[in-house]
Each structure stands twice: as C-alpha cells, then as structure tokens.
Image (cartoon, rainbow, N blue to C red):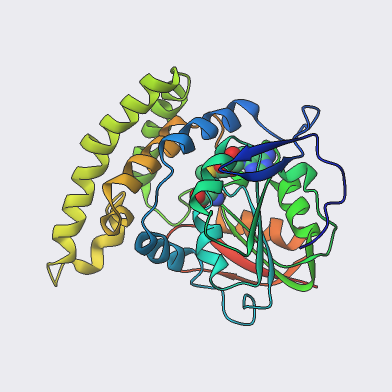
Length: 301
Ligand SMILES: C[S@@+](CC[C@H](N)C(=O)[O-])C[C@H]1O[C@@H](n2cnc3c(N)ncnc32)[C@H](O)[C@@H]1O
C-alpha cells in the first residue's frame, strides 16, 4: 500500500475498519452543501447488486482495455461514493485506493468489506493524501461536475497519474449531441432541480421518489416497448431517460435523487471536456460513443 503523504486529522471506525480522514475545512474547491447531500443520499442507497454493478460498470469502462487497467495496476477512485465502481474495478486491478469527502465512506466500508485489495480514505480531490505520479490508473465517475472548479479538480486527479498511466472521467454532458426538444425538457427539469435541491432531506427524497415513479418509469416503460419493436428500435436513443431501461428501480430512484436533489451540478460539451483533458496534460483521448455521456479516457505523457 502507498504511504499517506501527510498525517490524518482523525479516524473513523466502521465495522472494525479504521478509515483515516484528511478533510480540511479550509479546502476551497469543494461545495460542502453538495457533499453533505451526498452523505445523506449514500446512507439511503448503499446496496447495489453485484450483477448490476458489473453491467453498469461495463458501460463506464467500455473504453478501458487491459493495457490501461490490469492486475498490476495501482488505482485511485476519486469521489467513490458507496464504492460501487471501486468494487467493479477491484476485480480487474492490483490495488484500489478509494477517496470521498462525505459520510459515504461508511457506506463504502460496508459494500467493500470483503475486498482485500481496497483501502477507503476520507478526503477531497483538492487534498488527495498520496504522492503525485503514483497511480497507473485514476478514475472519477460523476464527481467533478459537482465541484466548483471542475478543471482544477481534474488537474488534481491527473497529477496523481504516473507518466504513461491513464485517467478515466465521466462528466454530465451539456446535451450537445441532442436536439431542441430534448434540451428544452432538460431546461425545465433543471428549474425543478434548483428548487428541489433546497428542500429538507426527507422531503427531497420523497419528491425524488415521486419523480422516479411518475417521470422516469413511464419513459423507461416506453423505452422497453420500443426496444422490442424491430423497426422502432433504432430510435431508442432519442427517448429521454431510455438508458434506465436496463437498470433496476433502486438505481432509478438513486439517480433521480442524484439528478434532482444535488445543489451544484455543471455540464460540459464533448469539446470542452476534450480541451480540459488536453490542458490537464493528457493525450490519446478517447470518448465512448455510448451513454453515459460523456465518458472519456486519456494517457499522461
Ligand atoms: C454522484 S456521486 C458519484 C459517486 C460514485 N463515483 C458513483 O458513481 O457511484 C458524487 C460523489 O462526489 C463526491 N464529491 C463531492 N465533492 C467532492 C470533492 N471535492 N472531492 C472528491 N469527491 C467529491 C460526493 O461526496 C459524492 O460521493
């Protein structure tokens, strides 16, 4: 295991495991309200079925091959949440360090309690307690758009990648590959997000459950029908939320809360993400053609 480069501020005990905390209240590139909201979200959604982790994980890692990630790789998961992708990757990697600033680290400790090649640490992207150029593979899925300065956070991640190593990122897309109607629907939903994210946690969770049931589910059902009609199948990507046809209602509820209940979210076009990755020092950038949009991988040179 890599040594920490500084002393922890405190430690937490979860199920007999000790988790060191490097949280620093003077960190600037962090939105504490968002972090608190995620801590509460992950204490509610802390169980993921192995088969579903593997199925959705394959969608995020579709552009990652054996050269980029293998059993010799030392890996860092930035913003691990409940640790579902740490769990996915632990089967393909040598060792995985998982960090998150929220209370989610306690949920991650539960989900990952049987993984021997994983260590969880409470830390923010601004103060990652590991040496620079130390990791073969760093990934951050659905995290950096919840941080005030996304590019600065991306730079902090890339700093930790070894020369010749790889960085995989998933950032919310700005619907740059979508038409007018899709964008309009999004603008309306975004107005609701701004309001819903301000509600007290229990009410927020309830409203998001209603949204999961009355908005996500109907689109999911339409998508499932369309998928089974040969001449309509090719249009499935045009149906909002059609990605969710492949997942359980538990994941839909979790994502509805994630999408509608989070105070800070930013969105980026493919071009903006590509430019940021290049400016952060990556080359050989490859975007997936498939959802979730956009996820991309690059090499540090
Ligand atoms: C949408 S969740 C994604 C979690 C996980 N990657 C997944 O996909 O299941 C976003 C996570 O980013 C974490 N986060 C927020 N601000 C952060 C920061 N400054 N540094 C690192 N992680 C942060 C939150 O605590 C939360 O767990």
